[in-house]
Length: 76
Image (cartoon, rainbow, N blue to C red; front, side, top):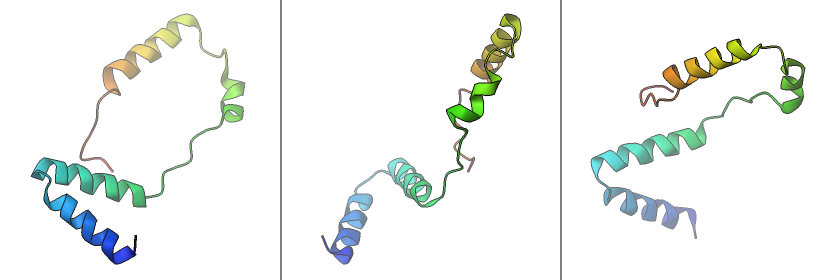
């Protein structure tokens, strides 16, 4: 599909979306064009295996579940 035709089809599809879905589409497209930070590799993390005792590991998991498992739509 030629670039101009693809752009026109995308605009037509976008115009059919509700305002909420247009926002989600905008965020998705913006995210696709933004470089993502490189995460740690398994080799980077391997030296950390076993450094936490059972209680510390449980506390960390509870903190992650309580504070980190939510989406901040304004972040980014």
